[in-house]
Amino acid sequence: MTPLSGFLAVMVFFTAILVAYLTKQFQNENSNYLSINPMKNANTKVKTIEKEKIVAETLNGRFAMIGLIAAVGAYLTTGQIIPGFV
Image (cartoon, rainbow, N blue to C red; front, top):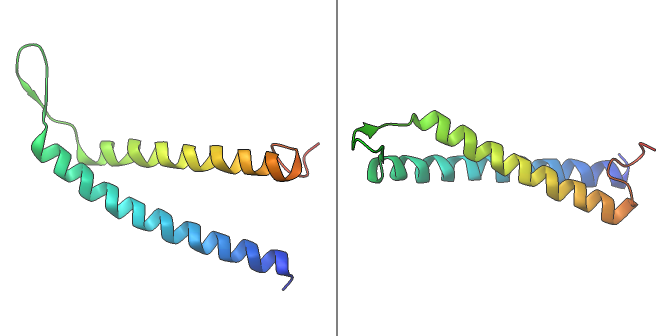
């Protein structure tokens, strides 16, 4: 195993652990938010949002930010947005 492959494997491992931890944390925060702040419209009817939708949108935003950080990191280190793709 080359040093580069070992480094990439370690980075993938840490990323997976971080995503699993953040997913659990966001699920707890979102369930707390739903129980405290139900959405209301102009007629003061309570509108409920499914917990899965909030978790999905939160994770979608987090993964988008991880992708943006990866793109900036690739650009800073190689000068290309997609390294090796001319």
